[in-house]
Image 1 (cartoon, helix red, strand yellow):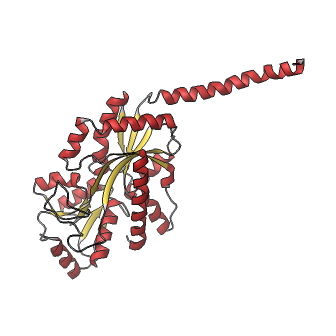
Image 2 (tube, one colour):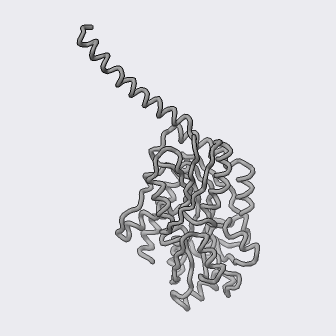
Image 3 (spheres, one colour):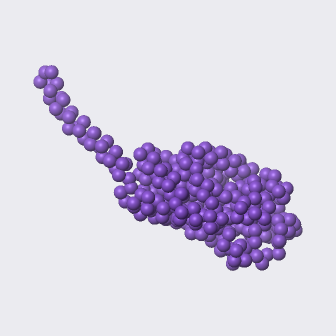
Length: 332
């Protein structure tokens, strides 16, 4: 090697050292995850299905990971779109996660339907684990005159647009379920959007609205207290927590099927070492007695799927829901 080559090599060495150091530091940061508090965004107020899923899971993850896992209810309305978008824009470093619902795929389609700027895309997220998956139930106040679904439909046909129902926001999970039913039943209901499923349930309990589609775990305590009556189940079959409740399919509504699942997501660019650790932690978290007991008591047993299976599930369910939204069209 001549003198010029030796000088070039000497000049390049600090640069190469710096590059290697940067790579080593990034790898070290990933292997040390988490080194500080992890935030789990729930894009709804407390009291709904996503919040029910997030809180016991966050506590379990905190024990497993050895760092605080804080639930952050970002109740900005828009059916959860605001919180979903905030999670999508977060740094893909494992410190901002998202516990959200099946409406994740519906909301961008609603933006396109109304020719609004799309708040986020599902492709920005990486599914980590499904936690819960329940059919929604049609709930009315216990004081309401409708004892059966047929009573409800008959009354709605006599009074188009007069029976009110609450939801977590336009094209959110609860809104799509109700509009799917209304379209198949040939009735017109009046939609009253709230800032989340919890406030919508409060609306039914207070008499502000007269009906609600919600998850079994959210409704069970209110049914047990005699405050709520359930009329039908959006699932393909009856569920153990409400064995006497008929499905819409049983009652003749063959195309009415809807599930409210809750799952954990990270950003698409999350480094693989962090994703691997997070998946392992979630697999352990859903098995803890505290999590299983909390969900079973609420009537929503754990419905865990790991990332590969959850990804396939999200793709299939999203395609079905997007088709339903397009069929429903523009509704307020």
